[in-house]
Amino acid sequence: MPIRRRSALFGGLAIACAAALARCGPAAADAGNHPAGLLEVTSGWTTDPDRTGMQALLAVLKGRAPDVTFVSGDGSTATDPVARLADGRPPDSIRCSGGTELAELAPHLEPLDSLARSRRWTAGLPAGLQPRLRVGRTLYGVPAGVRRTNLLWSNREVLADAAADPAPADPGLLIAQLQRVTATGRPALAVGGPAEVLHLAETALLAAHGPDAFGALWRPGGPWNSPATTTAQRVLDALLAHAAPITPDADWTDAARLLGTGRAGYLLTGDWADAWLRTDLGLRAGADYRWAAAPGTAGLFQSRADVFTLPRGAHHRTAAVAWLDVCADLDGQVALNGARTAVPARTDLPEPTLAMFGPYARWSLDEWRQRRSLDSLTHGGLLGGHRRAAALAAATAFTTHRDSTRLARELAAA
Image (cartoon, rainbow, N blue to C red; front, side, top):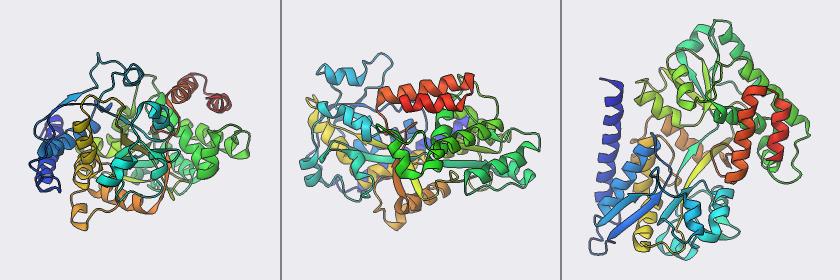
C-alpha cells in the first residue's frame, strides 16, 4: 500500500471512530438543544498529524451540533488572530499553548470560571496543568490535549548494529551512545532546522538545571551564570558533534526521515514523531523504532498544552461554547489525541478507552498520570510570542556561528 494512501486511511479511521464516539457521548441525547450557525476557530493546525486530529475533533462536534457550520480561521489570507482580537473582530475560539502565551491574550478573552463550573470543563484535569490555564486565579482556557516534547526516539536496527542503549538515563550516557553509533559510520543524531536546535538547547538546559531552576531561567535574574548552564552548553556542543548536517530550511520531518530510514540512530523531538513514523514511513512502533524520556528528564512530562479560548465579543458565542464542551469532554479528547498520537488532558479515561491507543500513546498516558507537568519553551507557552521568536532567532544564528556561549547569552536576553 502506498505510504500516502496509508496515511489517509489512518485519518479516515480516526474520523469514523470520532463520529461513533459523538453518537454515544453524553451530549448526544440532548437533541433538542443544538446550537446552529457558523463557528470560526483558529487552531494553527494546518499540517499532519494535528490536522488529522482536528478533523476527528470536528466529527465529534458534528455529531453533537449538526447545524453548526465550521469555518477555519487558519487560511493563508486570514488576518493574524491576535490583531483581530485587538481590532474587536475575533474568531469564535483561538487555540494557544497556555501559560505566558495565554496571559498575553487574556485581556481580550472572556473569563471561563462560571461556565467551567456549570459545564465541568476542568473535570479530570491534573493539578499540575491547572496553572497553565489561568492568569492569576482566573480561568481563560480549556485544554483539549497535551503534546509531550521531552522525548528521545531511536532506530532499533541502527542501535543494534552499534550495541547502543535506546534509553540512556542522562546526557553523559547519551553522548557515549552517540559515539558508538558514529563509530559505525552513520550520523548518530538526527537534527532538523533551527527549531530543533532550540529544542536540543532547551533539553540540555532542563537536564542540567532541573525543573525549578529551568523555570527560573526565563524570569528576571535567572541563573544563567551558574555551572549548570556551562554544563548544558558542553552537552549541546557534544550532541551536535555527532549530528547530521543542519540545514536552515529543514524541519523535524527531515530529521524523522533520517531516523526512520536508518541514516541516524537517535532523534530528540516531541510525540508528533510517532504518528509520522508510522503513517508516512510505515514503521512499527516498538519494533522498528523506540522511545524514552529525554536523558536527564525522566521524572518530567514537558509538554505543549493545546488550549482553546473564548474571545470577548465572539459573534457565534453559543456555537463557541458548544465547541469548548467538545474540547473538554472525554469523547472529544479521545478522538483528537487518538488520531494524532497525543495525550488527552484529562486523566480519568476508563480502561476500555485505553485500548483505542497504540503502544507509544498507552505508555505516554501512564507517564502523563505519573510525571510532573512542565511547560515547553520551543513548542509550548513558557514564553510569549515575541520572546519565543527571539529565542528562535538566537538558535537560527547559532546554526551558523556555533558558539554555545553566545547562544546562552542571547537566550538569557530573550
